[in-house]
Image (cartoon, rainbow, N blue to C red; front, top):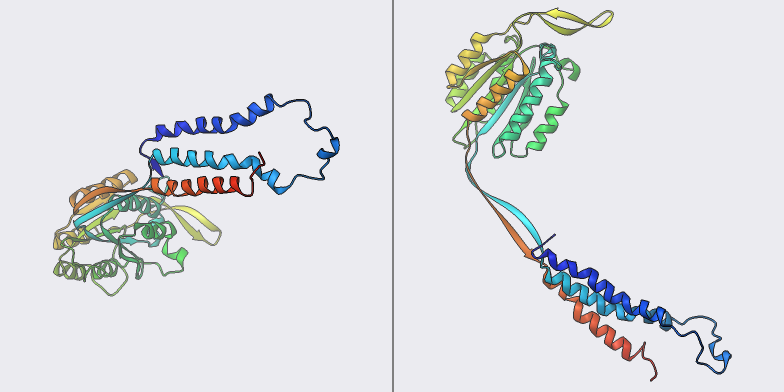
Length: 332
């Protein structure tokens, strides 16, 4: 709740002071003697309800005055809204979760951790786009169909892990991952549809050829951006051997030729990322290349609440008047 003229609320302490002043004034001028000739008249066993509540009767008037002051400050409830016209880009994110994505060349993270962090930032920048998520190793799985609720995607990314940790067979089914990502967009009516595929390996699983999947995506009007991830030299990786986890140096093959051909076939681009900063720059470039044709107009609707604060005022004053003439009436 907000106030149009909040300075009016500065009168509330004044109202409180005026309400309390008579009580303090009476205490200071209270006579020391007794006005009764017979002390027996003052011997009562207890205060009646009427005597107990009577001092609070004037408070009703001051509560009414305080409500008038609050009403004069014009309290409002504000509701911000957006009117969105046009349409965004429908995006399918295809992410490799094979064992090689556990390589430690994207310090201090492994490849998968670095990728999910960058992808999460990319999603945050695509506020008005429908985005879906596909992960692949030896098989491909839809984590989330295209949605405007990006919080769902954030939760999905936080829970992602390498295929072996998820109980999946290892491998890299690039063609199947691309086909699954493109298939999610086949019924999309958006003018712009893209797949962003990230991998660090070679297609060695699945029954879908990557180039065949690219041709199918192109036929559906889908542009594919491919990202090859990883250092071409030997890199540290965790290896589970007979004596537990060990750090060993491995070299992973990356099929850049196929990734380039996929991008060329669909009118996209191929990128190579060898560190976390480079990967972030790649997603930033894709973000700039695929702009959304969306016009957003923001407006705020204000709901006046002053009337609600005034409603009790006459009721409080009327109750005080009637109570003073009846239940709390005093003899002259």
